[in-house]
Length: 464
Image 1 (cartoon, rainbow, N blue to C red):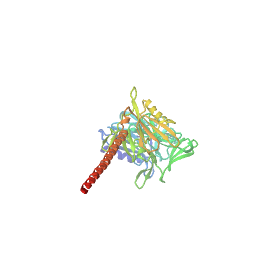
Image 2 (image 1 turned 90 degrees about the vertical axis):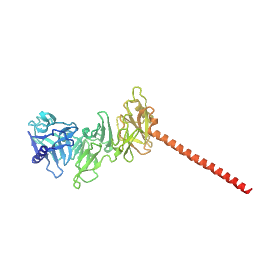
Image 3 (image 1 turned 60 degrees about the vertical axis):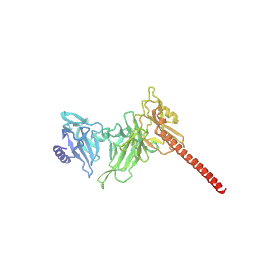
Image 4 (image 1 turned 120 degrees about the vertical axis):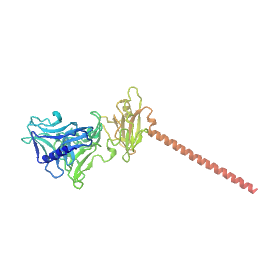
């Protein structure tokens, strides 16, 4: 940050602290460096709540991302960003970043030459002021204190204490932040709350869920001081994801890197926010614990399905182009991996009372199918089959649990797979060892018999 930006940052922080709300016609501008500086982050604080630390603050932020500068309006709790206008779509600007509450009540983020990057679209609705509430909800209010727009209606990857999410709403990670083609989401459905891995509008798999008992339906969820509360249509609490500690919860956050979510409280001892609950507690239960075509094994390590994987600086590079595209006369077969499961599930492809052979054939006949998961419960004889368009989220499971993961491969590959080669190698090795043992035993017996015979002859010669 150059000297001018640093001075601007300090002055705006002092000025913003003296106001509890912003009136119509207010503008605030941050200068953007002319040259790109990796790691650059600048914030001009506009508002803050009158609370003990940590309190909520509203800031105009500029960040260096991929050779450009992103400009956004941000709500922070202490040093944690809990809402960002650029979460789903970044606004890249040059020279300056400006936030304006216009005379007609529209809150707008602008760049040079009146370029609009984001706005609330509240023009003509009687907006009088911008305010940040003690809950962290950023609101536009009219003269009768009616909320005309609020950040709580546009959730990102954080849910704050007191915030409510209705069915069919979600928290979503930003693919712009984790540099991944996958997006995680925490979704509220009628019969459960669930975590999803999304690759596009059609390709989505759940990897964690929580359901109320007795198949009760959810109308909305609300984050309370002791956990995430689930309510029905009568506003009756029907279930709770509880906090394991007595510390009041400040927020629920979806991790952009792992896809896990946690409940966070503020630790006075550590002077920072600490997670005391996670939905997933083992690395192997995370959807991207390993790369495609990798298996998360005990204890939480990654290995590759193929022998062709090469080791590079302590990690394995797995072949990502083995499955798919087996159409138009291309022959394929299914490679079976016993005691391997998947954390990913897709209820739309789930089939029951189906044999392993039928599950295998369904994938072979589907050009887009890359793999299947087959499960058989020996005690109840329940049989399930899931089809996948990718090979991801694989993990080792306990022997005898009934899981078989089947991977589509070019014809002739399965019999040469590492597992089969390993068995063949073990068989050859065992055969060689057995042969050597037999040879040693036979040779030893023969040597003993010859030696005994010679001793007998020498004894008889001496006697005569």
